[in-house]
Image 1 (tube, helix red, strand yellow):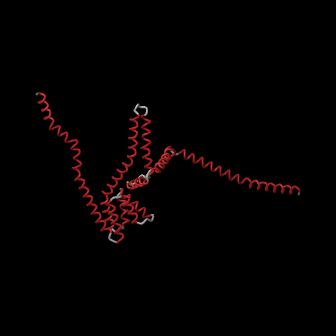
Image 2 (image 1 turned 135 degrees about the horizontal axis):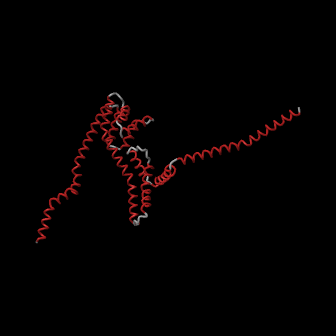
Image 3 (image 1 turned 90 degrees about the vertical axis):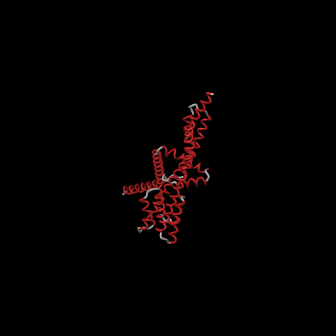
Length: 306
């Protein structure tokens, strides 16, 4: 009996002591486990960062910081104009304004720095070096905008050239019984190009709940082409007043084809004027040399014999 009482007392004391120690040490265990998880996550993040290429770890953050600094000092009107040009050019690479600013910063700052490092020990004079670096920086500042403008112009010309054919295709599809939205889907499938890309963007906006008229107006504003703006305005008016859209499409196609023919005639009439400059600079001097050269030689011989 005393042995049983001793065992029960020992078991009770051990259980009580274990419970007290568990309560006291529970917070420490939680803290230590959390610290361990934080240290593991930090080590994992460090390993992940080290696995990334140098461009993502070092160069891209530097360019982002530089672009933020450039965006702060760039006027809002210039930023808005650049964003507008990027949207008009299609922006197939999904480049934001800051990405173009990064490209410009690399061309304005990075290229002259590399040029200076390459030429500093060649013995070139300081004045020539400065002039060369300033010319490079100026070219780097102008070049992105020039390239963007060329892309924009080429895209607008391509849209203008394909617009009558696209309208004819939409007309045929609408007359076959499909609605305007279904016709746009067929255009996206059958006529790949910048215009189909923009129509696909309109369809995606309509799917997420945007009003069709607003999406078409935004598309016309984004493209900024007079013929296309007129076409979209006619489509919206036909939709508002319940006019047959096939007839409107046929009329718009004829008008756009007529305008395209007139533009081609206008370009053809400008060709003689444009050819005048190379003729005056290159052809006429050669012709004068061939015609007047022998006469000049004979005159020189006669005067020298006198």
